[in-house]
Structures are given as structure tokens and as C-alpha cells.
Image (cartoon, rainbow, N blue to C red; front, top):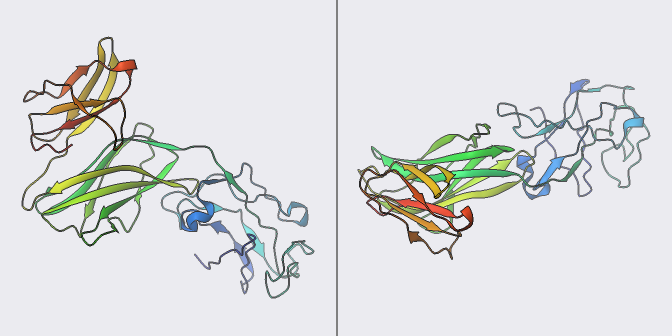
Length: 298
């Protein structure tokens, strides 16, 4: 990355003092904060950098990948800068875009524009989120069932002094597979023993983010707390067949027609030691399940 700048309130930007050469302009979508939240690059990418292409969208539709200089960014095509190589006479409504005025001069190129629009919904489907202790190290772990348009994850943890602390200062990059993936990240600052709330945030390729899951856990010092995970479910003639794994038996399987703080959970056992699946009648073929191990932790 050679240089960075911010746009003004009207979206105009400018790099001054560049040496003659060929450059690529990249919009940092993830670093834009709320400015591009929920926005996606508009369809189509013009390579016309002459005056005739002024105000056209020059941003490539495919966002930059995980290992690029700005993951999730929208890049232009190559722009060659040099004296008398640039289109002149661009017309803009504002003033003060650079030392040479809003229209530039023979060494300025003001036609490299980017287009964004409010995109449709994106979705990552979660299977589970949890945390455990292994030899004194706290690990946060989660599994996705699908990762539509998902780029990366952030993990946040409740702080003992109030508020939240970021567990993952570096983004955890999404695997991007349609069938989902299992992830884990170390929590290097959690104090044991402790009770914490972990919150998983997903970042999408349009620059938007959303809370994907939240879980409360009790972490013991010098012990391992296994997470009980629902690993699969499918509809049967007699009801929903639910499978789970991990944790300490015996298990308690619970069902609710809705989720959230107002959900009413009903045991749908029996939960016998060693059992890891059950077939449960559900009203209308839909609902939510959770599994508790012997410690009572979902």
C-alpha cells in the first residue's frame, strides 16, 4: 500500500504528489465503518479512463481475497499517471478537491469513480458457538452450516470491568465453503475461573456485519469444559431427528418453537447416558433445539 486518503462528504478523493507510473485504487470496504455498511459494489466495471468514461463505475465487482493488501476491498483497474496522459476538463459540483481546483490539470486524473448500492440480504447459518479450557488455555470455537458472502469473523468477550473486549485483534478468515466449517480462536486475556459472554460477529463481502451468535459460559481453572454441539438434524416422518456431540453425558435435549430471550424450552428426552440423537415431534416441522450436558451447560 503506497498511500491512503479519505473522501470528502460528497465522495470525492484525491492523491497528490504521485510519481509517474501505474497505480491501482482500492476502496477499503471493511475499514470504512458505517459509510459503506450494507453496501455492495454496483454491477459492471468500466475500463474507460478517458473523459468519456467520467462518472462510470471503475470498481471491479469481485472483492479482493483474504491474502490481498486490503481483504474485502474493491479495486479499480490499472491507472497510468503522467504529464499530459490524463483527461482534462472533468466537471464536478464541489470545489477544493486538490491544489489545482476541482477540474484538475494535465497531471490529474479525476475520472476513477466507484459505485455502491444497498445490497440484498446475506446470510451465514450457525451450527454452534462455545468456549472451553484446555490445559489452562481458553479457546473459543464455532461451526457454520453455510457461509453465504461471508469474509471473516470477529470474537468479542464480556469484560470483568464492564463492556466488551476484542478476542481476535486479527480477523479470522472464513473458509467460504457452502457446507460450512469449524473454527477456533484463543482467548489470551480471559481470567480463570470466570463467567463470560462471547459474541461472534460476521463480516460480509459488501462491507456489512452482523452478530451471528452469542453464548454464556462458565470456565473452570485447571479443567476442561466440553461444549455440547448439535451436529445435525433432518426431518423424519415421525418428527425431527436431532444429533449432537461433545460434552459430558447424560444429556438433556430441549425444544422451543421460538428462540431468543422469551423462548420457552421444554425437555423432550429421555436423555440417557450415551444417547447422542433423538427423534422429536415438532409442530409444523419447525422449531429450535438445544442440548445440555451433565454440567447443565448448553
